[in-house]
Length: 187
Image 1 (cartoon, rainbow, N blue to C red):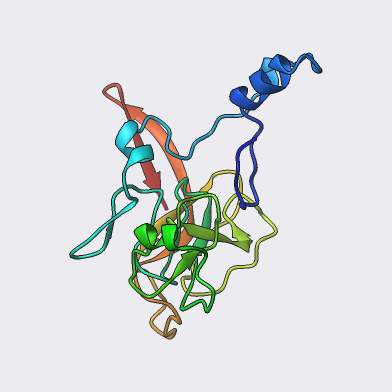
Image 2: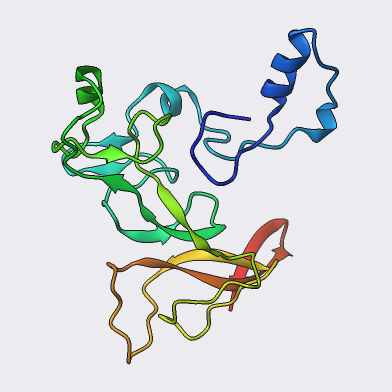
């Protein structure tokens, strides 16, 4: 488990080790779940700012730099928006000024992420959930176990999107191998 405000908390091997070391629990490490956020990133991912300046840009796929922009979350499982709250009257503290990336006391929704904005999934728009009802921006959206979110600019000609392009869409995909390389085809 990690400090997070996401709808997808994970029980990590680190948390299981902490519980075991307390002496109060016997743990089953086979129940540990992977932590995909920041996976295989190096120390700068943890020790550096998540947004660079001039112009403001996300330094990694896990973050976003355009407030309220629509897109895919970091692991491509859902569509969402770059979640922030602007111009808060009670900015958390002077220490947070270091993370005031937008210069207007904008605060990211996850209080544990050093004010780094992320694409926060819409609660009703997970690509692998076959009960999801699409918003109708593109005709070919698909929801199921073989679906993922793709950032794109596809929209029906008769629709004016309410968000900036590109945006995320759930599309069916297939993974196949060709000359020892994994390739993804979406349709």
